[in-house]
Length: 245
Image 1 (cartoon, rainbow, N blue to C red):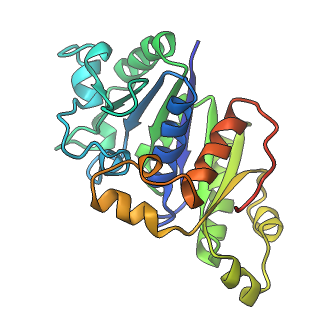
Image 2 (cartoon, rainbow, N blue to C red; image 1 turned 90 degrees about the horizontal axis):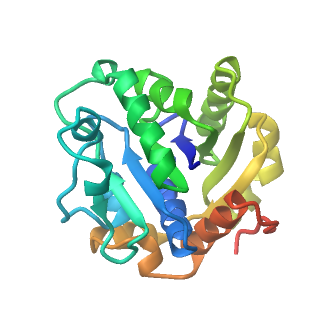
């Protein structure tokens, strides 16, 4: 059975969606069958990070309502093992039929190795929808004090929800900035109160790939792309050392 992974963040601007796209693409490159679901209703952007902005995509609501089948989800033109469902338009997270959404995810488990749920930032209804169905949670934070505080608070909410498999990804790390701030990744882990899954460096290629409507991993093998590949291998259970390079 496939594993459901929710990608969450305590606040906007952490680069959660680009991490979701990068790690999901890396797993597909490694031969895993992957389904990405954009659950950020109203502010959907996962298609851009995946390089699928120009592709026709179904919404997950169209699938769970029975208008289409999971087999009709968009296939990535470069990575045939990667499929995608976008978020529905003109509805609120509270309007999502949880039972039907759950049934769709059960079907997805039988067809995919990994199902990624890219949740909206914050701890409102969309966050809780994704977290409640997740087997594993990846919490993305930046290195700034506000992001770390929000990550800590989000971790507390997840603990109250009974979520035990929660791991931290520190995104957009700038080693020079770290030196000037006299802060380390260990400091961030201590303040957030969560174990580390990976660190991702600041990388202009993330923005450039999106601007050229391409996936990050198709444009470079270094920087953030390499970090996403390392995280993907750790998700598979491989003992890959944490590194920023």
